[in-house]
Length: 141
Image (cartoon, rainbow, N blue to C red):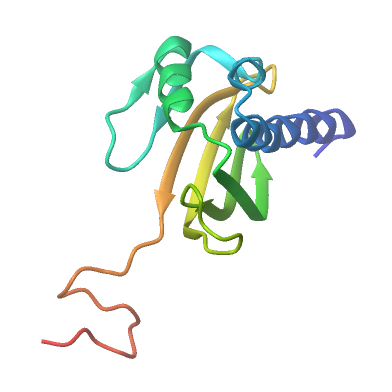
């Protein structure tokens, strides 16, 4: 990878990481500044959102100071950034530390200007019955 390509990819990673910061503090305008006009957002259990207006509306509905992203791993290559982490929610009025969360993987596709063109989220879930959680430990019949 050339130094110029490395600098572009670093900017894309920074933009992807900033999306979490803006969402965690409820700054939807800040989040919008990192997205393409034709951005797409796909989350399990929700319809796909197409275009900045739909994506911003969906993200604004989720935004709360009781929700935060704890990021663990970032991998980037050729216009894609994959972020592994945990989204944590705390119930209103709950004692600090009484939060619950779920592990996720987000796959960002970046534009040539290093803005977010698409984000697809995957959640960790235990395999349904009949599927093996591990090849050496078959699922119970």
